[in-house]
Image 1: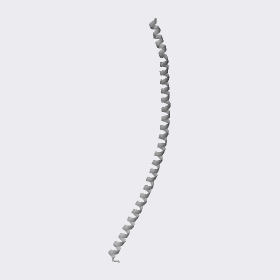
Image 2: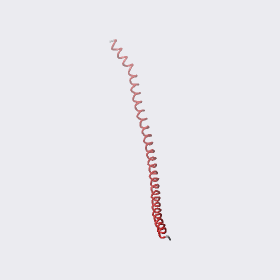
Image 3: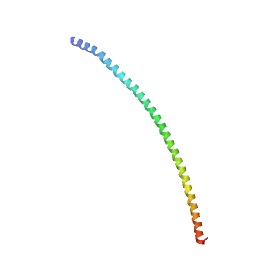
Image 4: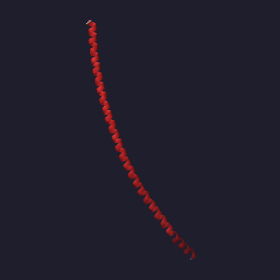
Length: 101
């Protein structure tokens, strides 16, 4: 009987330590979940801001490409007009030289 009484006393002594360990484990788990939620909220906010900034940068880039395209089209039109006038002038000059006038 002495042995079973010793076992019972040992078990009763360990119960507070086991309870403290369980309380500590549950508390750590809750803290981890709370911190993970907070971290995830910050991360989602960062991604939202970053996405908006990237969208704005892409829109600006598209506007600049559009302006450059319009400028190149004007330049191409000007070069074509210049070439047409140069051919006309060359033909007139050639005619003048040919006729001696």
